[in-house]
Length: 425
Image (cartoon, rainbow, N blue to C red):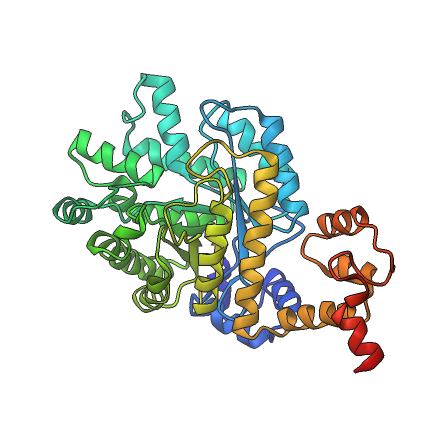
């Protein structure tokens, strides 16, 4: 049985029990929220990992890191270094978005070495296979779509991004209501192009029941992708985005009836004043399913600094109820990310997630801030560094400075406000 199926039968699985312990949540409550589809635990029956995670209402806001080869950069060893650094710096999940090299071999190694859940975007392998076989990445069939999903599920992939909301009806809405940028989702663009070329409905939508059968068999969590997400803040929350969201809401109910876990992917480029509206709409339309936001990016002008851009949007989105933040690196829109880009992206997203958890009132988040503040009051540098979100960088900064008084820093020296209040306050 799947996690959702077990919950519906009031069975608390060992993994759900572990998540409850890690999150400090009562067993009855986690069981209830899994049953209601408000919490998902992405873990394929065939995949063993050391660090499982739950995503959803009342849990710590989680972070995902994307890795994977491109057509220009396809060294497996580089992506495995990114995998290690992302996990070392605290990502809760990994997505392999590879489109270059031997995709199956890359995925096999990512699954082997990842200690956290692994997701994929199957349309990438489908398109790459078609390019290799027929020299045209749009020449694939519905049966090949299902074959790739079955193959990846059998290998142990924990969650799939499925762009099932890019339908003929929703593309017509997109065409009617012009955008600054049309489709910026790579998977969404591939499917829209395939539909235009073959004059057929999206196979992920048309054969959704067969996809549910595969997901149920292996307990793969479906991440219903936002193929029509806005790629500019000027397109945020437009007719096409909302039409796709309504389609995803209907598919969410179909998945729940088949006992398949579901989360919803969200935008994208969203200005600050639209973020709350987006969270409220997703929770309402998609029956409180966990919301997986891609940033969101709150401006279009932050090239080279989009990890900061995304952390601003992610913190706000999380505070309003988003459950899962996909990191964005500084190289977004510009190049294939480096190992250092991955490290900084994970840290930026974790800061956003933690800030959101404080706003949500999570006791563990508040306790962490209290402990580091107490260490600062005592000027306990060792503990401050230990409790920081990136201890290695904090230690490097501290060691690089040479204060005349060892119990202060080089910013204030003898004028340290904390020390003054300790002596004269």
